[in-house]
Image (tube, rainbow over all chains, first blue to last red; front, side):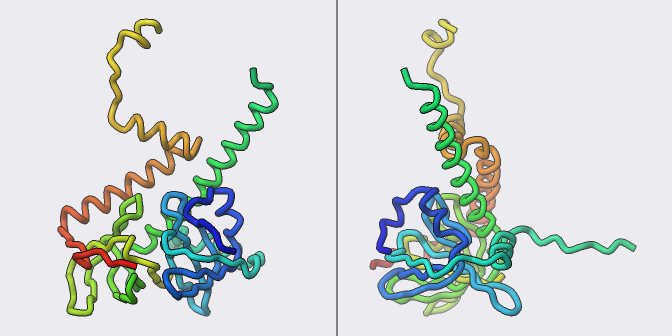
Length: 96
Length: 93
Length: 63
C-alpha cells in the first residue's frame, strides 16, 4: 500500500506491528523484516530479522518510508521473540 | 448536552489510543537504549554508507551521537549524525 | 478559587506544560514515558557536553 506514513496515528501503525513487512525506502531500497514497533514521535520503524544466533535490527526513519506491504502475520514463537528482544537480559544467577 | 454514553465512548477511545501510543513509544525507546555501545551501520542519503559505535539519541530522534565514525576520508572520533540524512541504521542484537 | 483563577499571576512552573502535553498523548502512562525520555535525553546531553561531537557530514545531505 502507498501511504502517507508520517501522518498515520497509533492505531493505524499498530495494524502493522507483529507482521512481516516489505518497505520501500529512500530512492530504491527495499527492506524486509518483522515490525517490532513504530515510534509515534518520528514514525520510525523497528524491523527485526531472526537468525540462528541472534537477531538483526533495522531502524528505518519515518521520513524515508515510501511504500509498505504486509507479507504475513507472526506465529506464536515469532511474536514471543519480537515482544522480548529488547527487554533487558536477565540471565538466571546461580548462587552457590 | 452530550449523552453520557457517547461521552464515555469517546473517553474510552482516547484512552485506547493513549495506551497504544505509550506501548509503541516505550518499545521504541527500549530499542534505542539497546543500541548503546553497539556497532551500527548507517545507510544514508546519496548512497552514503558509514559505520560507527552508537552512543545515544535525543528523544525527538533528530540526532544520533556516535563515536569512531568511519567516514570515506578517515575516522572521526566523535560525531553527530542528523536523522534527516539517514534512511536506516542496522545493528545486531 | 475566585482569587486563584483571576487574581493570581499566570505563573507556569517549568515542565508543567510539557507534563500536560505528555498526559494528553500518553494518558496514565505519561509519567513512565516522561521518565524514560528524561533519562535518555540526559545521556544524550551529557555525552554531547563531554565529547563535543561535530556534525557529520558538515553540510546536510540532500535527496
